[in-house]
Image 1 (cartoon, rainbow, N blue to C red):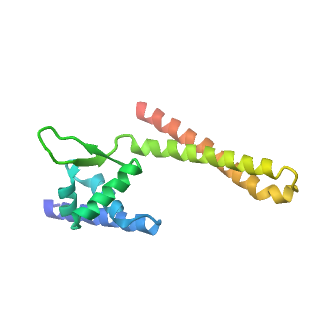
Image 2 (image 1 turned 135 degrees about the vertical axis):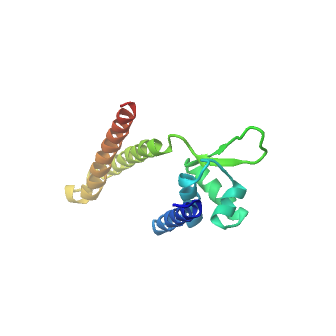
Image 3 (image 1 turned 90 degrees about the vertical axis):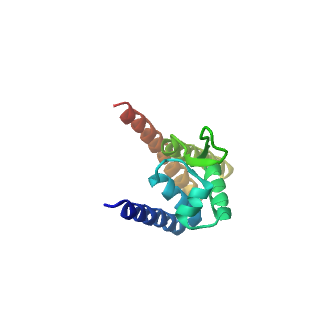
Length: 157
């Protein structure tokens, strides 16, 4: 595959990821930035490079990188000798996703438990929705913790 064909495929991937994220209720431009940062070389890109690669405005890139930084996906990356700001996917982000999802599930379990204690005098049927919530999130917390541990184990092999 020629370099131009490869670059075109990478652009198509970035656009596809942006559309995917948009279909999940997230903004498209951060999805495109994430997609590009997953396939670009080098792994770090300046705002100018991102804007050029994705044919979008610097303002859109600024908002997208801020969004991705707040989400913990992207970090600023210093390049010695350059005054530009570069961005890259934060190392360890994907593992952190499982950890964060486990924490969210644990918080939901606590909320469901609080709701159940609030409804302590209610019928079992009335409490069923909260029990379902608690049980599902308890299951998810356990499974996400298991996924995180399994991933760490696989990385050691």
